[in-house]
Structures are given as C-alpha cells and as structure tokens.
Length: 292
Image (cartoon, rainbow, N blue to C red; front, side, top):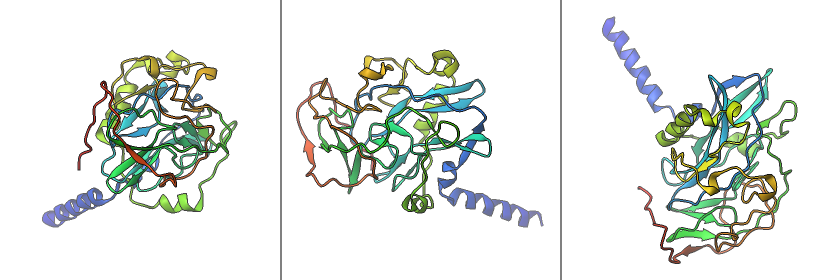
C-alpha cells in the first residue's frame, strides 16, 4: 500500500510538471482598491536582437501597490509573444490576471500600455521564422544587425492611463472570439529573470505607490533588474511623453527612426511593408545573439 501511494504521488507530480503554465495566466491576487493610473515614461533602447518589450504594471504586495518597471525580456523560446497582465473588476474586487508568453497575444483588459500594446494585440513586431522583426515606429531600436520595419498605425482607441478593466472608471473591453480561443493555447509563465525583476521591485520601497505617488523614479529598464535611473527611464509630464500613451510617439527626436502619426491595435503580424535588416553602424551598441 505504501509503495502504491508513493507511485500515485510520483505520478501526480509528473502530471503537474507536464501541465503547461497556462495556469499562470489565471487570477493570482485580488484587492478591494483600484490600482493607480499608469505612469508616463519613455522606453529605453532595445539591448539586443530577440528581446521583446514587456510593459510596466502595478503589482500588489504587503505594503500596497508597487510599480514593476517595463523592461526588455528574452522569451523562453523563439516564436513566443508576451501578453501583458491586467487588473480586472469582478465580484467586488480588482483581480490580477498575470501575463504570459504564447504564440498569440491574448486579452489584456483593453489597457493601453503603449509601445505597441495599445489595448488589443501588439504592433511592436512579429516573428518570421527564427527572427523577430521590430516596428521601429513604436519601439526604441537603434542597435545594429537586427530586422526592422517602419509601419504607421492608426489610433482607434481612447488615449488614457487607466490601468484596470471594468468597475468604476475602468476600461470597458471584452475579449474577442479569437482571444477567447487563444486563452486555451499552451502558455508559458514569465521567465526566471522576469520573476526576479518583479520580486526586486517589490522589495524596493521607492516603487511603492504610497511613496512615489504614482510617479516612480525608475519606470522602465533596458534589462530585467537593472534599477539604475537614466534620463529616458524617468516619468515625464504628459505633454512631453513619447512612444507610450502619447498621440505623437516620436523616437526621431533622439534617433534616426521615422515616427508614426497614429496607432491601431491589432495582433502581432507580418506587415505588408517590406522589412529589412538594419546593418547601419553604431559605435555604442552591440549585437547579441538569441539563444537557440
């Protein structure tokens, strides 16, 4: 009997190990108070080929809401895209639906996180084979030897900084039939670097909303866990913001990339404009190979 019980426990453990991490996309924590509005910030430069932008968000800990800076992250494997997490109102509380990696961009509450995540889908780039193509009109990409394209997208969403779905003052958005279907795909939880990034932010009182009043000194980082302030990382007055929830994102003010005139949310896909590989020299940037 003892051997049989051990076998059952061992089999159950193997079953849990075999289950995809779709459960990570479920509700993790619920709070009675709505999260603060999203801070306004600029996107730091992409650090290397294969990195994908993961927008910042308000997480909740023992001392209340705290900001987890947006960062460039490597996916668990080639071909995966990031669906951001979001806060959603239901049953009298605000529940957190965690972000995840998957083959498609799922529902993230209609929250306009900026930088390609304008409430539905992703306009920041797409995978073609083993290569990621970056839309430089909404991404701060200046490194060499990466695939880029420039696509102007049309803005059909209300530009605001609301960080939650439903409830009083929340975003009224519902998942599409495609997004509901994609919710049942195999998903992958955030990488270890992403989890460490959130954990480190939660242990730093400077990221607490009660301390920074919704304006964290470091709102975004080039890589997970790099919490050192630069000019581009700091929150800005709304009239100065570029690339995020602004109606006029423009990286050409500091880089040579063309800027879009507007946005249109959609799922990440191949653009009709012919993409190309950027081989222009840049003395201060280095190319980093994506692990296979």
